[in-house]
Amino acid sequence: MPRLLLLIPVVVLATLVLGTLAIVACLLVPGGRLLMPLARLWSRLVLWAAGVSYEASYDAGIPRDRPAVYASNHQSLFDIPVLVLTMPVDFRMVAKKSLLHVPIFGWALWLAGFLFIDRSNRERAIRTLDQAAARLRRGTSIVVFAEGTRSPDGTLLPFKRGGFVLAIQAGVPVIPVSLNGGTAILPKGSLNPRPGRMQAVFGAPVDATTYRYETRDDLVSRVRDRIGGALAGAKGV
Image 1 (cartoon, rainbow, N blue to C red):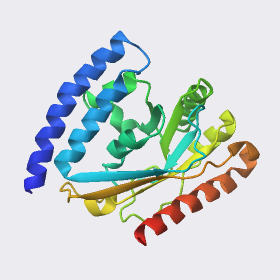
Image 2 (cartoon, rainbow, N blue to C red):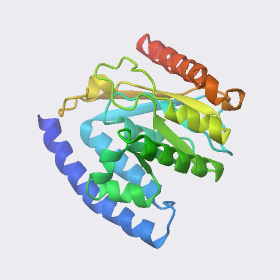
Image 3 (spheres, helix red, strand yellow):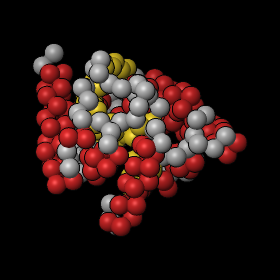
């Protein structure tokens, strides 16, 4: 409980102050370029208040000069701040529509060009993915949580296909991202974090241009196997 008593005011104040600054920055300089420094500061404050540290490793083949789809598993609410701090390139994220309704936080993300998907409406979801494909073609990497929601116990859930179809359509590689440690720190359904350490493993790119829409499930399986393998390796350390 003492950790939660520190985390709540830090999250509220950081979101209020930095989120407001982010909104102003995005209005003054459209495109969201000024958001990321504020987002990284927000992430550091949140992880510090929760007692969460992190480490990251990167495959040497990850492209730094062209866009990609970064497909990650999802264990905890702390996955987002860890990704903000460890992503090797500028990015935008495809997030659940519900985040758009979070005051200040959601508004800042929307102004910065983050995309919000409504999976209950197929037509709207397709339009969102089309927008994400356009961002990729313009050179911005996209992050997707491949499971679509947080895993309750850290075990990989079935992967949604949207992010992989996106990579095939845009002709960009998929980077498997394995996030580990979040379940032990703050499992789904809990509001009281435990101090701990998270790991982000950015794996070798998977070339999506060798797949077609009809073989999208093969791409999903290949990336899922890589993410699962990295998670198994992390747990075995």
